[in-house]
Length: 69
Image 1 (cartoon, rainbow, N blue to C red):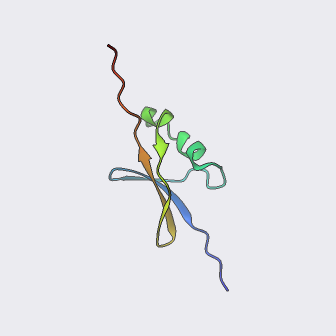
Image 2: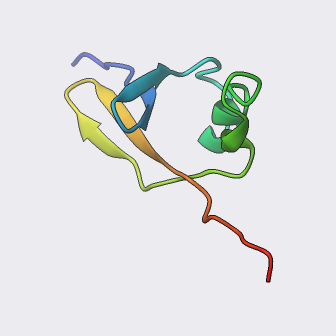
Protein backbone atom coordinates (compact mmCIF):
# COMPACT_ATOMS: atom_id res chain seq x y z
CA UNK A 1 0.00 0.00 0.00
CA UNK A 2 1.35 3.40 -0.99
CA UNK A 3 0.54 6.64 0.78
CA UNK A 4 0.40 9.84 -1.25
CA UNK A 5 0.74 13.21 0.45
CA UNK A 6 -1.85 15.62 -0.90
CA UNK A 7 -0.66 19.08 -1.95
CA UNK A 8 -2.59 22.04 -0.47
CA UNK A 9 -3.48 24.81 -2.91
CA UNK A 10 -5.26 28.10 -2.27
CA UNK A 11 -7.43 29.32 -5.16
CA UNK A 12 -8.47 32.95 -5.64
CA UNK A 13 -10.58 33.09 -8.78
CA UNK A 14 -8.19 32.05 -11.56
CA UNK A 15 -5.06 32.38 -9.41
CA UNK A 16 -3.71 29.32 -7.61
CA UNK A 17 -1.27 29.88 -4.77
CA UNK A 18 0.91 26.96 -3.68
CA UNK A 19 1.03 26.31 0.04
CA UNK A 20 4.06 28.21 1.44
CA UNK A 21 4.08 26.15 4.66
CA UNK A 22 2.49 22.69 4.17
CA UNK A 23 2.99 21.70 7.81
CA UNK A 24 1.34 24.82 9.22
CA UNK A 25 -2.09 24.18 10.74
CA UNK A 26 -4.75 25.40 10.37
CA UNK A 27 -4.48 26.17 6.62
CA UNK A 28 -5.64 29.78 7.13
CA UNK A 29 -2.32 30.49 8.89
CA UNK A 30 -0.43 29.36 5.78
CA UNK A 31 -2.65 31.56 3.62
CA UNK A 32 -1.89 34.59 5.83
CA UNK A 33 1.77 34.30 4.78
CA UNK A 34 0.68 35.73 1.41
CA UNK A 35 -0.81 38.86 2.99
CA UNK A 36 2.25 40.99 2.11
CA UNK A 37 1.51 40.47 -1.61
CA UNK A 38 -2.29 40.28 -1.22
CA UNK A 39 -3.39 42.56 1.67
CA UNK A 40 -7.04 41.45 1.48
CA UNK A 41 -5.98 37.97 2.64
CA UNK A 42 -5.59 39.31 6.18
CA UNK A 43 -9.39 39.13 6.52
CA UNK A 44 -10.23 36.40 3.99
CA UNK A 45 -11.64 33.01 4.94
CA UNK A 46 -11.34 29.57 3.35
CA UNK A 47 -14.05 27.30 2.01
CA UNK A 48 -14.29 23.65 2.93
CA UNK A 49 -11.50 21.74 1.18
CA UNK A 50 -12.15 19.61 -1.86
CA UNK A 51 -9.86 17.10 -3.51
CA UNK A 52 -8.83 17.29 -7.16
CA UNK A 53 -6.48 14.42 -8.01
CA UNK A 54 -3.52 14.70 -5.65
CA UNK A 55 -4.35 18.26 -4.54
CA UNK A 56 -6.54 19.65 -1.79
CA UNK A 57 -8.10 22.89 -3.00
CA UNK A 58 -9.19 25.66 -0.64
CA UNK A 59 -11.21 28.46 -2.24
CA UNK A 60 -10.34 31.87 -0.80
CA UNK A 61 -13.46 33.78 0.17
CA UNK A 62 -12.96 37.54 0.19
CA UNK A 63 -14.24 39.46 3.19
CA UNK A 64 -17.50 41.39 2.69
CA UNK A 65 -17.18 45.02 1.67
CA UNK A 66 -17.83 47.35 4.57
CA UNK A 67 -19.22 50.82 4.09
CA UNK A 68 -19.68 53.61 6.54
CA UNK A 69 -23.06 55.18 6.99
